[in-house]
View 1 (cartoon, rainbow, N blue to C red):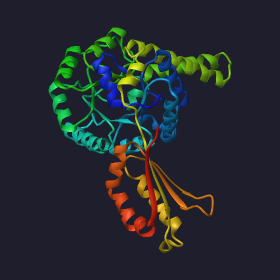
View 2: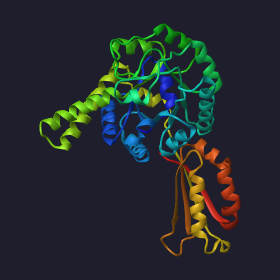
View 3: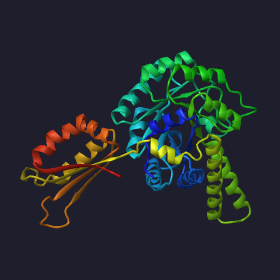
View 4: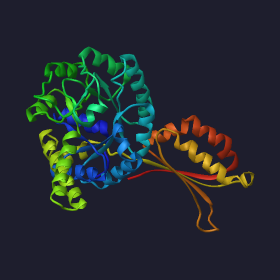
Length: 389
């Protein structure tokens, strides 16, 4: 089943009163287990990567693994940047494979949050990629998330939410109504009246961060009040750690620990997909949501005599310049295998979406390279654009 558009997915979830789990992955075992759990529940799913976790893995490699795994999945999948801290983080995540991004500037003063979020929205919308913003502040309690989300709880107000959405143009809004990142101390207390007022003030799918520790009835109450996406990580990590530890304490090999961790993650994803109401909706989502399509931009060409001796220099400059353009995912150049080929060189440029190709064609970095080097020195060329299926 192909990747699906995240905006379509979350609108479908809100309209049909269920939520999609957004599960943070920190290695390939998490990716495999998250998809296995979603497939067991026949639920759509979001694989998320939190920028704060990048210290533990190479994000480019893990995004690529998620993209390949999603294409083989039997359920609809979206790939998401969670808690991106900057415009640069959003650009990088889109390059690596995200088809939805979150910019989290909620810890900044309101004016800076709006400005930072608006910059990401302008960039991402030009590529037809939806953006999640956050208003209010969801802190962390205990464990690693306490370090990553330090600070005091600040609840979202309906009035601020309405103004924030109008000022930023976000597609989804993460709100603070009493949850925390990490493990809860004591019984969770949610301000459901506040959430209902926010849902009435803004007509967007709402997002809850800090889902670990909530009761099933609380999840249901959140979803009834407009929540369409629930971020979920700590409980997965705890289940994986406990399962792996049991194998290691018993003297079993590391591979057994990995198998146990995957099984625990799969079980928790399947369970929460059912709690969130997403189970059994895979086919309906596939029918209702547009697939996500990348665009391949292929240029066959020959360098002119004016480029003699500088071909490698020109190609390397082009690779650097084009990779810096938002929405460009891959830039390769190849040389013909046979001497009698009509075209001796080929640029292969993969873009995040058809809209990304249009933005690429207008980008100053692309135009500078094309006007200054490529067009003057490669007049003999052929361009082909096609959609990757």
